[in-house]
Image 1 (cartoon, rainbow, N blue to C red):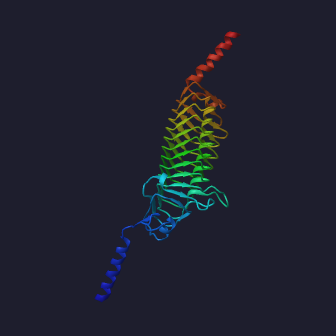
Image 2 (tube, rainbow, N blue to C red; image 1 turned 90 degrees about the horizontal axis):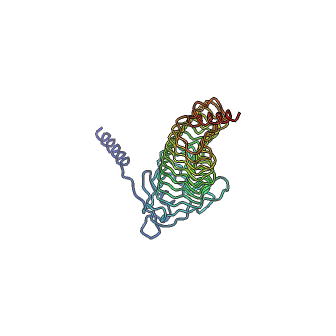
Length: 351
């Protein structure tokens, strides 16, 4: 009986030791001092929670990340730790496991569409992962999240891609302090909900700085800078209940545009020097609120259609409001009211 008790205690003790073993650090480099010369080999031989430290080199690989590991550049400098696609038609980092960190790389060359759109970093069905401090260029998609929730994307730069950062059916993610420029689309959401975009810069993109569409509801955009694109922030196709606040949107054709979307709030934003319109709410868009915004030097400041859109307490300089729904006139502010009465008075005098 004593032998059985002793054996059971030893067995439990061994399980506890295995469960509390410290994570290992595995190195990758080509100088002969690292554990491996290829990132994929390091992942294949790693355990969950290990850290893979990559020395400053250029690696030509397509990497499958199928373990919960941290992959980081030793220098933390993306410019000297470069991962380029061995096969330009495949993802460079294809992440299939939760709790992954990728940080400190320049990732380039996934730029050939064969069966699907390849990405620099691709997450599908992945949760609780971190993508940070990386530069993604010359890919079809820089960072691509598909059905992936509760991830953090921070301090990344995406340039010269078709889409800089893309989320499809991905919810509750945080995009913080990323820079998307010289892409066709800077940041793109499709069917993605409850995401937070804070302190991002989406500038000099060919079409839209931030495009949110197809039922992408309850997203919060704050303290972002968007400039030099066709549309700075675009919400379309029933993207409802969003909040846009304290964003700086300037020098686009249209600053903020809401199309066929309802119950969004646009407040405390700064919109200036947009060549056509500062804020546009058109087609079947209703119950949107536009308040406390500062608009300056836009060709037209606010253009609205739809019904029951609430527009008030906006400060407008050197442009005006074009409203096709007269039921909204009480919300357009005193400046336009004075202008209307002034024009009427002139015509009365001419008669």
